[in-house]
Image (cartoon, rainbow, N blue to C red; front, side, top):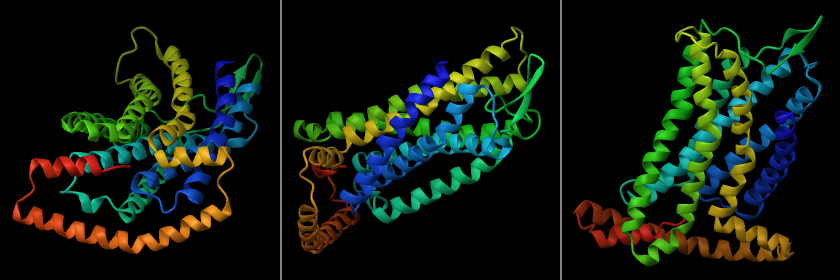
Length: 345
């Protein structure tokens, strides 16, 4: 009942919030910044997962799976695409903030829209290719319910003693442990650097602080319980750890609940878009107040086109000056502090 209620609440929330977010990103916030590019791809991943939730809702409402093995595998692989995709996109956002604030000059060439788009493409290739073996171990199988055989899905994985356990450890390291370690490391360094910035710079970077705190909350609340339980359950199923207390049935039930917790990221991620991106929040306010019109949009587009050339020229000149400073070794603490204060999302 808990799983049915949970997924029934998540499905409309995930579809509406992430659908609206994608429309805002693609219609009103173009051209996307580096951070907005990662957030847009995160919203797409969450929307795809939210659209697959009706299958889980039907299953937990009726306690049987009539859709066959193909849809069972597809639904299971979409869950892994979303979870590891969310981990990696949040990891990319944290790395961008780390480079912008801790190393504003050294890695400035990496913080470009083209690099962000290529990074997102690589993330999609990794998670989609990784979902193929994950789909192979999600089988629809028949279980006995009294005297009746009932088809089930989401109840367990096969081949724990062959290739599944090594695959699990690879997925945990690449898709969870490395992003979690990088998020913790980068957040600590960013917080420390912002504490050393001036009072004015600290006020301007409240958005960054909110962004990093929300990322940490999503990692700790959504992903840590599931991945920790999955590893413990996998070690017991593969008989690498003795099951002295016969805890496999308990861990299996806990695993189902932690899958629900991991799925809540599709409803929590829009909080990241809203509270950490000022342009996103302002656009939603304008839409709510009915102030966003085609006329205003065309006017903004024209003004943007006029200012783009001068902005590019100034950025080019500023970049040349910064490179000259770097080459000649004239970057001092004040200049670095100023760049930290000016690096906004």
